[in-house]
Image (cartoon, rainbow, N blue to C red):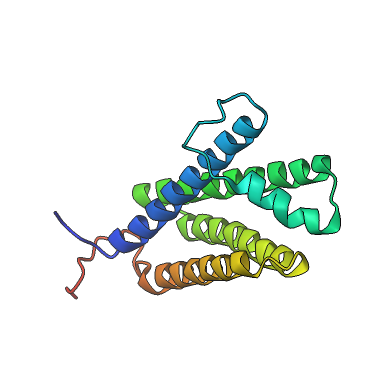
Length: 163
């Protein structure tokens, strides 16, 4: 197997693509479970809807508003995962604009974690806030790694450790 200066950025983009896709899927399944379209014993679901309902209940938030917030989060996650898949495909093919595609995906993801951290602060969900800050930091670290490790040459054919 040949490792190039493109291997790590592609791996990082693949990780975030897969991870956010799984998060989105388990949240969609959780939403379907809460709509009673899946059995109550369905195990592969995030449980995030019930958590969100318990957090927003502090301000007597109507169930419809909580549901709307949950749908908004799922759509945001779906957008972020689609953008990560697009960036991964661009890096894999060596297409022009791959760096822009990656920055766009990371920006949408960072905005999601920032929005969560702000909501956590508003709703006093400090345990969740720590997780969201860790995700924010991991996302920034991944973006910085890609920026630092991005190929200097357009073709990216330079092998790691070779001039």
